[in-house]
Image 1 (spheres, rainbow, N blue to C red):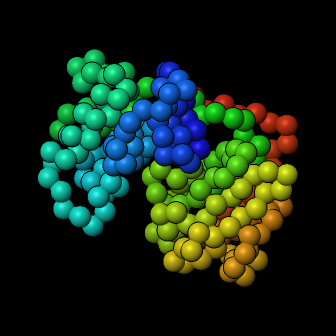
Image 2 (cartoon, one colour; image 1 turned 90 degrees about the horizontal axis):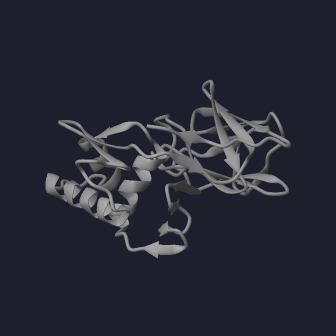
Amino acid sequence: MRTAFDRFTLDSDQRTLFDGAAPLHLGPKAFRLLEVLVANAPRAFSKQELYEQIWPDTFVDESNLAGLINEVRAALGDEARKPRFIRTVHGFGYSFCGVLEAEGPAVAHLNFRGREFPLREGENVLGRDAAADVQIDDVTVSRRHAVVTVGDDVTLRDLDSKNGTFVDGTRLAAPHTLTDGQTFVLGDAAVVFRRSPGSTVTILRKP
């Protein structure tokens, strides 16, 4: 998924941050940090939450996170005292404070526990991961659980998840073509797919 802010574009598929059309150098963990903050803007993440996202099951010194924040700020030309993108929440953690615009119109959406998540052309990763295109916050869902691919047809594919993806009670072993109004289950989490013919949704997040 591509997300634009100011003159920058964050491309999760290519794992690249662009300044206009020019790719910027950003280490994999710094990219992951920016990806998590952008995907959940303007939510503030505690330092502990960020450790778990970037260094799962690994103990790291607090200076490692500060170093990644500095790396991201340097790439974006941001300043800690006058932040345009990365805000320090003193005594807690960090948040993304820029204006985000997700590229591309929504052509379909998913409903999960009363929330609506737009789907766009191409692959949309579903999972518990904070940087998933559609975050399904349920303990039975893997970090990257399944992918919904939107094209002429809309297909659902499991990503070797621990607890499986089910349609009509059958665990998926191959891609499945979704129909409007169909319910599928990730682990124990029921999700409803809906087509949005002719609709256009632009997501703007403001600080």
